[in-house]
Length: 448
Image (cartoon, rainbow, N blue to C red; front, side, top):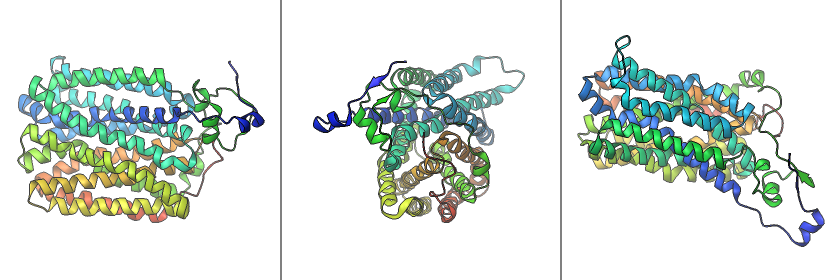
């Protein structure tokens, strides 16, 4: 293994190195990778009307098909987080992206494949399950990368690159899928999704390393910014492994963790509405055309694009001023209060333009707050952030399994306004549970 010599302290003081900026390039890659899951989450909701019309699939059946994605997403969260901690996110996430890109492409040919044993609806649901299983690896592995590549004082900002990617991916995916479906049909949309995912996977595998110590372009000054407590004359690349097993006993015995998990599930329910039913809500309830609906479906993700980086900055500033516990809490309370207020007001507004903008703003403030959940996973378990964040995201995915079905039931029985009222109520509940979350209650030792 090649050993990279660093300058001695005396030489560094006389001719200080300018820190390289590789960490920011890695964060850009994290944002790009987190754009991809929107292809799996949103593609079917935007193409759903065309598929429904072609194959006479009922709204209730479509709800079950949509819910297959979060089942796979939930079941493979913990394996994805464990793999990140054990093998490192570069290799694991590359394979995961190739996996779900393959099955996105398979969606285009699914109606032509033999399905006499399970039926077309179950075939669609199975592929959705497999896409969700692959995309489950994205966020836990991204959290692992942020924990390794960002200093502790900038974890909120680092995590905001993931939410920025989610917003950018959602905004572009909705427009991209609607446009391609309008011109070439829904099958072409899925083919292109598979190609895009494969290209990004190859780029990630070639350009990213698990830790700064492994990257040949990181110099001593940048490493000192990221590892301020490490003073060595030589360093060598290390594997991105936590020592031993995740501290599951401490995790499951912590009341703070249980409230973190439950609050994240309530928060995630809101975003699953945008990922699955928002386009259909605009077309069926608000009367928009497919093209206009595709354009307006992008607005929640544009709001995320704008507000999630701000949420990361606010979180870090609040932590520096009030400490980890009160800082993370105050940022969550601000974001979720704004989200619930805008959502409730928007769904009760009759003017389409104002209503959609208000509801879109609710999504933006939801992700403004979301960075704090992921940053807190790193705060609590710095060596095993992949495992804890995967457990947390599994809870969000379980609510995501419920969300499409329950939303369809309430919208059909009581109307779309009542369905969105429930989403707003869960947003409030999510914020209130943070009274019992303590980001200072570290469950294991310092980062390795």
